[in-house]
Image (cartoon, rainbow, N blue to C red; front, side, top):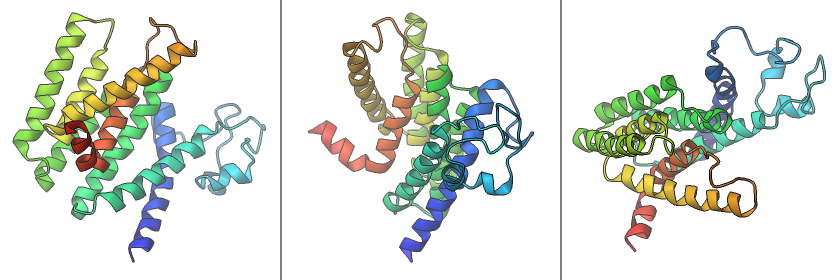
Length: 250
């Protein structure tokens, strides 16, 4: 039974991943995510139903538009597969959650995926999506009580205040988008989990940034989007809270 449910959730993840591709492409441009329908960005060809099947349509079309032959980015099936994988992981690892809690987790994970790829593309974290992270954090707290309200508020105000101070004192080193994002994450993860997530994100960010500099892919002055590391730290805490906490204390 668990296997069947996990499979269905994985399929749901593929479908949601297809929608997230639309969000990732259109939201930074200020375009509607509803209209017009999915189409080739090169020739405007509106995708037929069978061309909208996650992953499979990419394979059937051999990664090209059926009308103009323009190559379709591999990111599209990658986002779909990633979303499906994380949905299944959420179901299997968050076993203590009620159905409303699991729904909140799935929405949270979806928003993190969208924000990650948008930040990688544009170095921006759109307010509309960050606000949705905060909203689902509030809903999660009131519906499930995990984290309890005071921990949720402490996480949001505490880490948000620290990042705001850093952004105020060193405006070139951090944007207000990151400040809003960490506050929203704090609302969902609560205290002290958000502080641990930030520590993990900073650690990974330093390592990856250092590797980019060493391999001459970036210079020290080049900006590096921090959103993906924040999302990664949040996901790690979401899935492996006990392990990460024990590792840090060790």
